Length: 169
Image 1: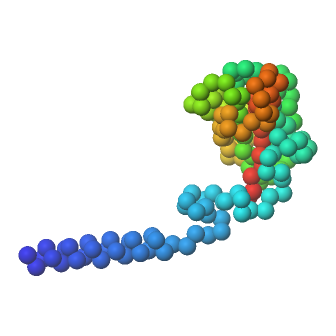
Image 2: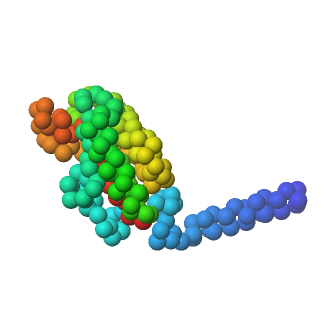
């Protein structure tokens, strides 16, 4: 019985020590609040427009647009992506987030999946041009961040896109 009490006390002390050491670990400036190692973009000074290529102010970094319900890159998009690849490769340590977007037609789930396919198609093409995969991040916003409001063909066309946002180092 005495040996069992010693074991229980030992396990309790060990567990308490682990809990205290884990909860008191200080997050470094480079580590995110979630412990992922990602920086909080909102608290980091950026040298680029946070809306990325959608802003039209980042010379050499172009938003591309897609046909309805497709994630295929046509020749016009490939030419724009060739320029984007050169821009990305010339920036050294800059990481670029590729954001896939859709128009408002379709379900939320479908549009998130389509936006992801678009962003991944772009990333795959950029990697084929020599951009290192670790310099590219992919995210889908589906229909959640439209460039144009309205239910017109013009608005839909503007919203079916992949844009590029340089992230802080």
